Image 1 (cartoon, rainbow, N blue to C red):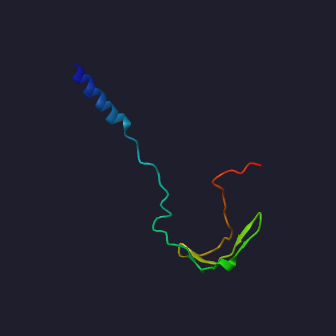
Image 2: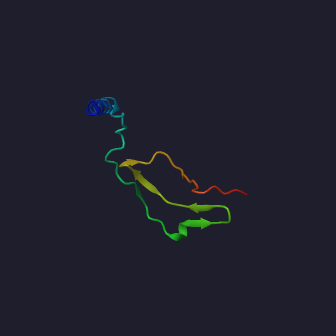
Image 3: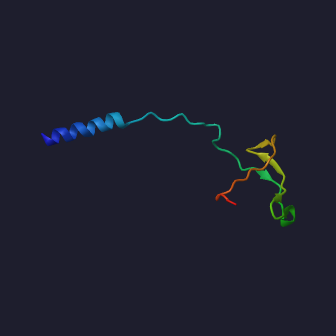
Length: 80
């Protein structure tokens, strides 16, 4: 009798535990590396509160760059 309960439990877990595959965004498959001009240390300006880095990106994923900007985020929050 214990074996029957065990088999029913396993079968119910197998039947109800399976989920459908999620919908995935396939737009970024086989992406190319961005092409950019190399920059030296002279292109970086540091002050007490800011860092300015200059670089020129030619292409992103094989297409010309249409949007410009720079993103930055901190790993640690600085509390004052």
